[in-house]
Image (cartoon, rainbow, N blue to C red):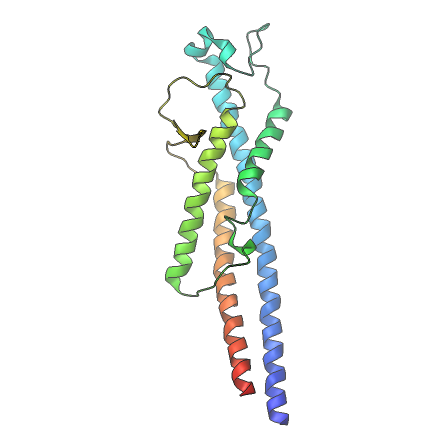
Length: 208
C-alpha cells in the first residue's frame, strides 16, 4: 500500500508540474496573440495611410474629390485626423481578431492530437483564417475614407456586402514574428495536453 501511495503521489506531482507548464504556455500564447493584434493595427494603419495618399493625389479623385470622406473642400487637401483614424482601425482589428475563433489557446473545446500532421494542419488553418480576416479588415478600413465607394478596382471584391482585399498580401515582419512564436507555443500546448491525458490515464490504471 505504501508503494502504491508513493507511486500515486509521484504521479500527482508530475501531473501538477505538466499542468503548470501548460498554464505558462497558454499565458505566453495569449501575449503573442495580443502582439499579433497590435502589429495588425500598425500594419493596417500604415497601409491605409498609403492608400489615402494615393487616393487623394490620383487623377480620378482630383476630378471628384467629394467621394473621399477625408477630403477638405476648402483647402482641396485631405482632412485626415490621424488619431481618429487610428482609433477606428483599432476597433476594426479588435472586432475581427480578438476572439477565440482564431486563437486555439482560448478554445475550451480544443481536442489535442500530438501527431505532426495535426499540428501542421492547425497551423495552416489558423494562418489561412487570419489572412482572410486581415483582407476583410483592409476592406472595412478603406470604407473609413470612401464616401460613395471606390472606382472599379480589381484589388477588391464584395463578400456578404463587405469589401475584401484580394491582391497579394504579405504580413509585416512584426505580424509574422508573433505568429511564428504563437505556432511554436502551439506545438508545446498540444504536446503538454497529450502528456496530461497520458498521465491521467496512467493514474487511472494505478487505481485498478
